[in-house]
Length: 64
Image (tube, rainbow, N blue to C red; front, side, top):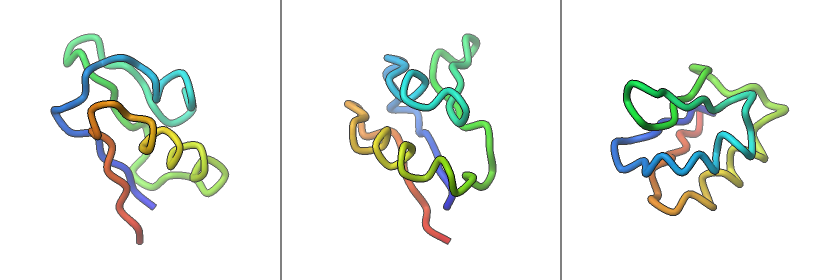
């Protein structure tokens, strides 16, 4: 599974709070970024939760 965050990101950092192992806030871009090209399996469920809870619908999940 892969994840992308698009420019609609509001920077509320909800995804960072849910899963700091995967998501990080980029102070220069003022948006969250994904730390991995491929999400480790142990984080897939919480990443799906972050995508579902994203107020801007900025998180896209790409299934392999």
